[in-house]
Length: 149
Image 1: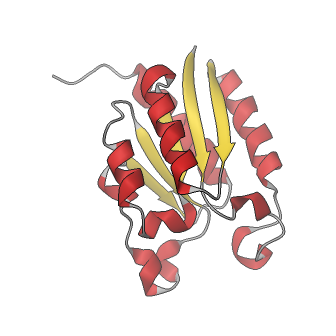
Image 2: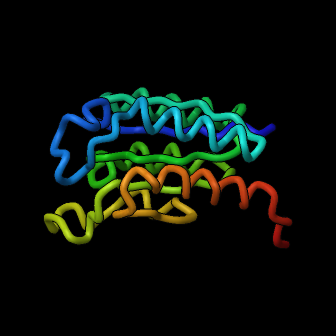
Image 3: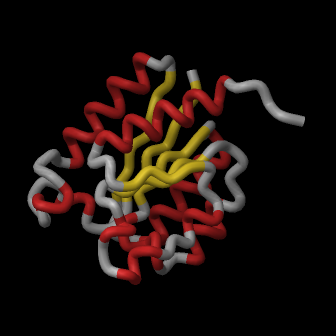
């Protein structure tokens, strides 16, 4: 059973309350419950975290280096600003999937650039909270795929 980290950035604690016309009505607790259920079905466990503090996300990425097999990350606003999160992700050897609930490419131009994408093995955007489950599925697939030489 591999451990997959699901990391969430700033303001995602307000999911379901903040701008539901963009982010929907599901809460982060709903997303976590769905992620836990799916991970168990796929034979994995998850460690699910959210923080409004950049350093905590970095610390969890460092923790994942020791005991995590993959990372699904919704860096939220840190997507567009955090070289520190990119640098931390670059130290992680497992698969990384970047998630965005909204389609960031249909929004303000400053949201079109992602530092995290420079490390991500895949990016899911605009699929609502379903993107989390798709991200977990992709990490699970990557963990069981034969390594390319």
